[in-house]
Image 1 (tube, rainbow, N blue to C red):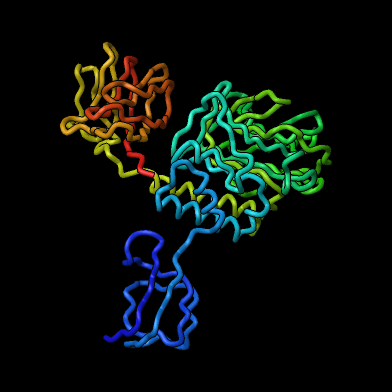
Image 2: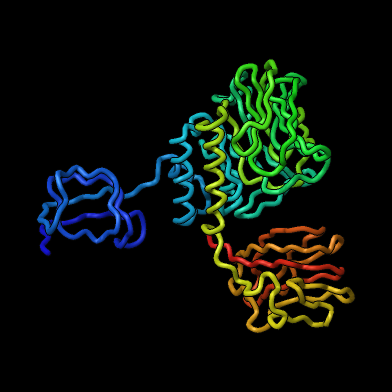
Amino acid sequence: MSVTGTITYIPKYGEINQSKILGVINSSPISGYVNRSIISGRTNLAQIYGIVSISDVYIEPILYCDEALALFARMSVQPSALLADLIDKTIIDLKVAGVWDKLDCYYRFDLHTQQASLLNWKGDLYNATAVNGIAWNTTLGFTGAATKYLNSNFNPSTNGVNYTLNSASQGITMIDQQIGTWAGLIGALSSASAKAVLYARATDNMLFNYINSSLYMAGGIPRIGMMGQQRLNIMMQTMVNGNSAANASRASAEVPSINVFMLCTNNSGTPTYISIATACDAFIGGNLGYGAGSAHLALYNINKYFRDNIDSVLLGPELNPDPYFNDDSLWTSTTSNWTISNNTATFAGGTADNLILKAPPINANVVGEQYRIVITHTAALANVYIEFSSGTGGVTGSGTFTKIVNCGSATEYFGIRTGTPGDVTYFSIKKVIG
C-alpha cells in the first residue's frame, strides 16, 4: 500500500480509532487504506478505489448541534460523552420531526443531576423550579408529594410564542400511576374561563382536559405514559402516547395568565391536586397535530427512545449477583428472622435485622458515590431500608420503589433492613455513572 500526503482527522473525543467517520471529504481522488469500518457523509469524489495517492484529506470534527452545546453550557455538571450523544440525538430528532420549533418548553427530568433536569431545553428561559424539596432520582425524574411539585415558570399569556389561544398543547410523561382520587398532572387556571389543566381521576380511570376554556372533555384511558392535551381552533383533544384518546368541539375563551405547574395544577397561585407519582419529562407549546406522521406521535417516539436508553447511559451494570433471591446460600443475617425460598426473602418478625450478601459483600468504598436501588416488597406497613451499613433510605408501603443512596464512608455495604413482617422479591443495585 502507498499513501502520500496527510490525513487530518479531529475526533470529537477519544482516540483516532473510531468506528465511524462522519463529515465531508473534499478531494478529487481518494485512494488507499482508510482504517475505519464506516465512512458516511458527503464525499465529493469521482471514485474511491484500490491503493491511492492523495494530497490531503481533511475531515471536519463531529460536533454537537448548537442547541445541544448551549444546553451543556448551562449545566453545572457536564454530561458524560454517552449522555451528551443521547441529548444531541434527541434534539436533532425533535428538529427533524418538526417538533422543536412548535415548543416553548421541553424538560427532561431524568438527567444526571437535578440542576440539569430542571432546564428548559429550548433556551435559558422558564427553567423549572423544584418546590419544597420535591424528591428527584436520576434516570427517573421528580416525584410529587404533599406541598411538593414543579413550577415551570412559564406563563402562557405573557410568555407563549407557540402556545396561543387557538393553537396550544401541553403534556407530561408519568412512569407510575397517580395515588389519590384526583391528580393534577400539568396546568394553570387564572379564572374560570382561563383554564388549561389536565387531571387524572382514579375512580373511573379518566383524564379530564380543559385547555383555554371553562369547558372540559373526558376520556377513559390509562394514567401511565405520555399524557397531553391540545387545541386547534375549536377542537380539543386528549392525547395518550402520541395518539388521540378523545376529542370534542369546545370554543376557546382565554389563555391562563399564571405559571404552569407540573405534578399538580396551579389554581390562581395555589397548587391543587398534587400528583403522588413520578414524571420523567414535560412539554408546553403549540398544537402538535395527531395521527400518523404528526409531531405529537413523533414526540412520543423520541421520548420513548430516550427512556429506553437512559439507564444504560447513566447506570453501571447490576451489582447484586442475586437480585431475585434465587440462592439462599448467598445471603446472611444476624438473626434467623430472615429466610429465603421460592425467589422471596421473608422477614418473619421480631427484632429488626439486616439481610446482606455473604462475603464478599457489595461494598461502596468511595465517599459521595451514588447508587440506584430498586426494591419490591409486600410489607404494607413496613419501613424497609435499602441501605448502607450506616442505615439510609427508608421506603414505606408495598410495591416497587426506587431510591438514590449516597456512600458516606469507605467501609459501607448494602443491605435490607426492616422490623415489620413482609416479603422482598427484588433487590437491584446499580452504580450511577453518568
